[in-house]
Length: 224
Image (tube, one colour):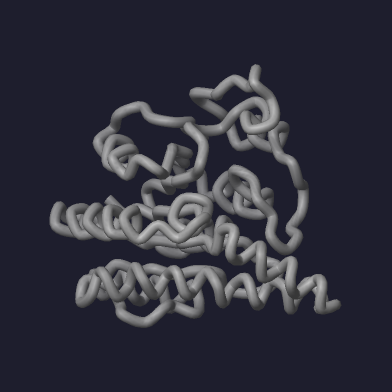
């Protein structure tokens, strides 16, 4: 199976969680051992947003803010690459084409952001599209997708299944801005809906949820 795993910065980088990064690295090695091809996209989390805030304070424009956040996401990516060693392509892919070439070499591709105006969700969606992946799993700081923000609303209800069209109704933002933080960004959804790939959103603090999804168990929220 060809899998794209999107690991939210809220999971491994807010604050930096080396133990969890190690668990994910072990998981990736095991998936590779069992014949799966995997691409991973890592977000920059709180640190990236802190740098965006600093850039704003310095009067830098949104393009510059994005560029700085991308650099932060790539630092976290390097931790994964170093831990994976020869199973990875060693260098951080700087384009979607680089990531696809890495996969074709039967290596684990791990990357962060790519360019201003593009979230790491969109990066993951583009890899799905270009690599013809079978599945996208997004590991977040929530149990799945809710009808409203569970951090703000005690009566928020987790949704077991959604269509891509349904997903638009729970967006906090309908366009990109530096530091956007929501379940899946709108541009990524357009790509995934066009590709008609299965997407599952899970609690990423439990790496075993990723394994459960790949084994066909129902975990989190399924989007089709």
